[in-house]
Length: 432
Image (cartoon, rainbow, N blue to C red; front, side, top):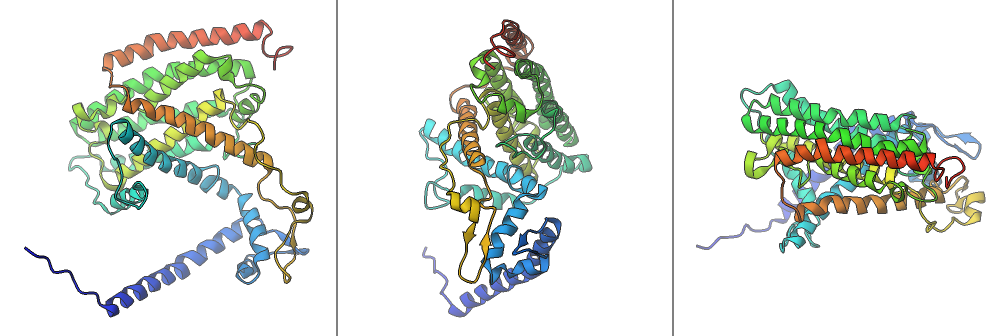
């Protein structure tokens, strides 16, 4: 049976181009320009040639590019940029998206498969975009007897809790969304929301498989949160602070994993359990309970939970880097900026003035961000690796590990920290 391909019509092609151009222009005028003006009114405008730039004149950067860089610099100094772009949600979501793609390709290589291949010219690089468009366009199906308000709210709360976790992670000196003195306590508080959200989502679906998965998740998270918190007390004892930026800065000479390897190992194992990664993926055991507490989620509700899961994975990996691997500290590999740029700025052309105060990012910030990303990517690799190597363990073995062995090792780590402190190896008069 032969299939006749439709004929190409130039008129239809031109019509589709004009339709796309119309809608792009319509959305730009209706949404884009008002959004830009809202941002310009929200940020503190720079002074150029002794004159304060107004939001109305700011759009003249199309004709005068010398205004672009000061506006961008002013925008980067706002809380909106830190929350939405760097080091907040946008930065974490970008790393999370890369993690999803790398995980699928890495597992395929470990299991002698191909993995994503067809969507995109190079190794299925556009597969993630295709999956995202598919989830956005799919119908969201709500179980007939579900508690609909809670069922709808659970994925949003999950992403919100993950974003709050990300907001507490310092990426570089001075670059953190929420630099609070009790940052580590804030991390513990945010982590405590995940079991609640999970069991609410599972219960609201009014289905047996999500409920079994939710109960498993609750037992697992509660049993592993205690050794997780105890494993970090050694770092708090040696640094004397709960501020994550100060903890990262205290490791300028050596990372804490050198003196507290037991705490690092306990934290890494409990981190896998909190993330529900293999071998601790009992709440989502597909061979037993379909997809666990995610069974009844569909469309973009499932997509939001997946986004929150990988944001949470990034946040835990970054927290491990900040607490045990020195955070942003590392050898200076970023070359310094030319002195004439730092003092005189950049001349954009014969009709523009000099732009002092550039570059936007300092050498220390770029170098710190580079080391932070390299360390975080390395930790993420070791988080992903067990999925292609280890089998799933039984629930009784999991709970026994959390309530007995890991708690014991966490106390051993605390005694090691106290011994180093009172022996004078670390702290006043010691190495640091």
